[in-house]
Length: 121
Length: 110
Image 1 (tube, chains in turn cyan, blue):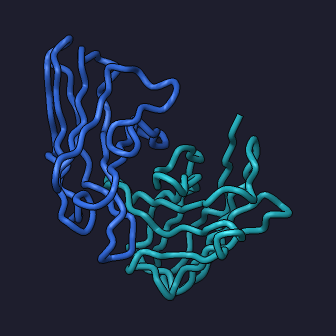
Image 2: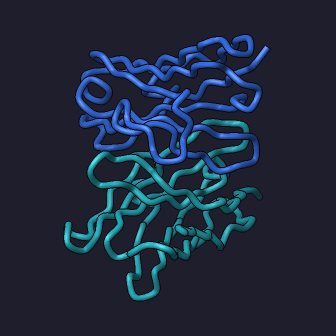
């Protein structure tokens, strides 16, 4: 059974930093593109970014609103995905979901339960 | 303002058929597959339809998807109370080089 467990969500002040983790199990993590999707309170889904597998270059793509502030990385030896968030803004307040990202059709087939990041002074 | 446009809400009586539209442009829906997700309050989204009309294992065949030009749609056949949820479409946007979502549609069973 595929499991994605996010952690690291917290209350942080504007301008601060935070790192989220996503522990994966039940599939071959090193062979899976991964992504982060967030949802602000009472709002819709918003793509944050994705990271490809090493065989596909291991590169990342980001939404414009987080590009330059957020960094997605992966440790295939630990089956863990990360989201490093810097220069946080109040508008980054959201539940952050870790997802698997099918590279053929682009859909998110498995989702974690989410972790809440609150940015407030 | 979302790149993909969905109606905020759709409603129907039990056993009715309802459809949710997802309107985009040539850089996203017009050129790339559309995926649909279902989300209940306080829960993570769940994949419902991928690549326009493919149904993942375990998803009811009452759900179907289609795409034509720069628009896509999700149909729910035989509406049930358990279908009350929020539904989101998504597609890759070649111009933005980003994945874009619709604003979401709340389905209410009357």
